[in-house]
Amino acid sequence: MRMKTIRVGLVLAVLCSLMAFSNPANPTVIRESQEQVVKLCDIENTTFLPGEEITYKLYYNWNFIWLSAGEVTFRVKDLGHKYHFSASGRTYKSYEWFFKVRDYYDSYVNKESLLPEVSVRDVAEGGYKLYDRVTFDQKKNIARSTRGKTRSETKTTEHVVDDCMHDILSIIYFTRNIEFNNLQENAQIPIKIFMDNEVWPLRVRYKGKEEKKKVKDNGTFKTIKFAPEVIAGQVFNENAEMNVWVTDDQNKIPLLIESPVAVGSVKAVLKDYKGLRYDMTAKVK
Image (cartoon, rainbow, N blue to C red; front, side, top):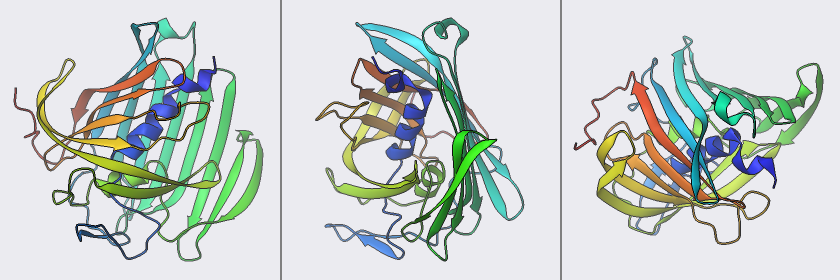
């Protein structure tokens, strides 16, 4: 079994994909078959505030047994002309006999565009370690990656990227500000992010609304459902489908993510939240 199939980084990648309603590679607009138009390089933040903090509990299912594996917390800070987005994930001590994770992700973004200027990934997952600091030159379409096993063992490479390039954290907050109520069911939405020195093109399928979705230990919510495309390989099998439920309100935060992986399945469930910009009106009971 490849331990990467259950790493917290996978769930973070899932959380990135689930909120993707746009294609950041297009510098102006994306126009779907239903003539929906979305601006992609100039967006006003009307969804979140500094001080927002959201935590998810991570589960792994193996041989029909759900194990509480760990938690991941997302935070927003105000740095004057920038926002600092962060995500920190770790396994529980009771799980670390099997697999230990300490993951830290940071993204420093321009307040006006919500595009990343610096992205940092510092992860330790079992025996796997990675430090990767990416500096984005959005005007020149360049990403410079300083990457290695540790901060003291790195190599810098330069990569040509698309216009308006996002990282794994910035895309979550950017797309939470996009209006998507006019999407037709089964609409396909393309997205792109820069990660692991590559531009990753994926698609997200809108699956409609569920008015009464129960979320473990949280209650029942009005939700919007999406199915992000996955890439078959070491983590996902061919034809695997990931399902994501998001609050159907002004906050647009993920509630539940479920996905099969090569061995077993993974799930991320909302555990706690504070500092939301709006009341949680999606909760019905």
